[in-house]
Length: 249
Image 1 (cartoon, one colour):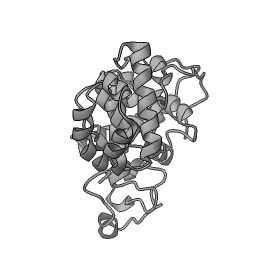
Image 2 (tube, one colour):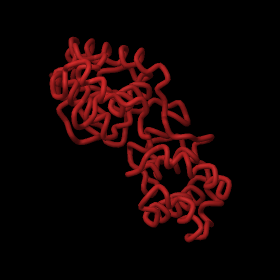
Image 3 (cartoon, rainbow, N blue to C red):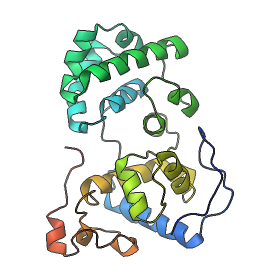
């Protein structure tokens, strides 16, 4: 069960359709989202931030590490470099030392220096609230851009990380593996205003219950609507042992 083929609009939002998705799929997709919303009423971005610049930076740092580690280095990092101009002028070794706990700190330092310099040169040090401008920044892809747009600016966006993509396929919302195509196909099933919270719901569920290996099917609140039910233990007692109480610890 996948949406019918529709036109893609690279670099834009998936809100123009060449065809209308199957109504039964739309109903099932929205039911799943409603139940996940009830299950995770506190769903939100699990990275700490106070402004768009901080969110952009911590999202870059979150690659291949945990949100907890990024949140731990955040206070000292932004005390030293509170804005793009300060970070663009950072001494490499000092910046590396601050973000070292997040892993791959040399490559991440290079990314942050280039990103901050680009913000200063192109946007006066401010984070632009437009997808087109964000994805043109060094090291920023659609996933990071949509995180920033949705959570720092209140502009709806779908964040297709590994959890979102996995759950969208398990739920039969798409058969695509390319993140942009997943974003477009799944986005067509929901009102644009729901995209950011939809992302949080699927990501929270993926981190806590619908794991890549051994999903806790027997403890899943949306199991009755999931075509992949049975990929993990269906016994409630066994499944409950797989449930994580936190996300990226």
